[in-house]
Amino acid sequence: MKKTGKIVGISLGVIVLLLLVVMVAANSILANRLSETLKQYVVPGLEEQLGVSIDFESAKVQVLGGYAEIRGVKIGNPAGFDEPEFAAMSECRVTLKLKSLIQGGIIELSAVHIDGLELMLVRNAEGLFNLALILDRIEAEGAAGPCALLTVGAAVALQPGTDIPKILVRGLSADAIVRFTDHSILKDPLQFTFDLVVDAVNLATFERQENAKGMVSIKGALLERPEACIVDLVALVGPMSNVDKLDVEIEGTIRSIDVELIKPYTKKLDFECEELGLELGITCKDSMIDEDESLVTFWISDISLLGDLKKKAHGIGKVEVDRLLLPVPVQGTLFKPEFADFGKALRDAVLDYVLEHGELILRELEDEASTELEKLKEKGRLELKKVTDDLDHKLKDILKF
Image 1 (spheres, rainbow, N blue to C red):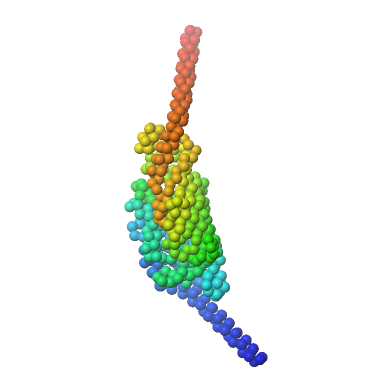
Image 2 (cartoon, helix red, strand yellow):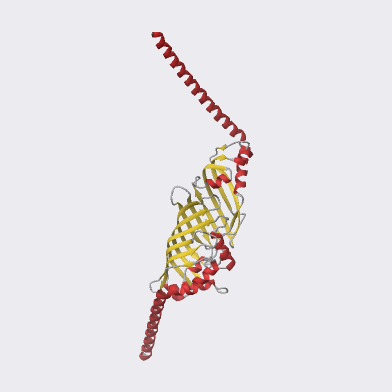
């Protein structure tokens, strides 16, 4: 009996030793040859699928250390854009739960941190949007969701007929710079940059429990003017196993939009304003926007009407209102939303307001004109009195002689 126990003990010791040797060997291979493997077998398929160039400096997985990282990522723009890059990232570091890797089943990532992320969103002179073109390729190729790219093993999910690994991201954080360039409005490109902070919890590629969703928060503002274009968005996200099957609810606001920045857009719609903001609520089922549950509401204050819009408002050039609401319906898909005509919504809202408050607006204009007239009269009286006084003084000086 003692002999049998000794044999079992020796056998278990040998097995544990072999497992340690295998893990150390695997750790060494992944740490030293992962970059080469990704560049040889994974990147070419992604480049073909997305229609853009992809490069990175290094990648490694430390199984024993419980982390994976990739550095120096650069993603090129699709054909038809002068800007060379669509995205760049200094580093993405993923903290793995070693137990989940050993046991199999669910791959649990306790933390994902993305550092130095830059997105270059560009609309070219023909009106094509680089992000939209890339998303079109993803939908056409039937690519897996973004979580499927967070581990090396998930690369197999990009192959047709294979299952998406069960991945759970407990926490994700990223500091992102988003640069927007529009070549379609003016001769000189319109450019602005957002500085954003992204935090997320409990993102998964599988159904965890009934109605369980992850949450993504996006906050930030203009890089050059932190008090302008204040972004505050929250999204509840269902299982991210397929871009065609995402359930998402998005709510939030963008406040204090820089009106000088967007003046080229507003002038094309025949108006200028003192303040502009928006509130949005969008619900998607299987990546399709629910038209009955989704709406973007703009608010505008103190509007100056121009051109055709001024004519339709019977020549009224100024509408002083604290907050004029413009509800704009949304349809389409999560990645290709289609907004109702903003210009039409603006015209309808302004004209309805003018018709509803026409008498009040005209009375205010009359009062303003009357006030200005009285000011002019008073100014004239004062100037006339000054002239009369000057003449009187001169006459008295002459009579002294």
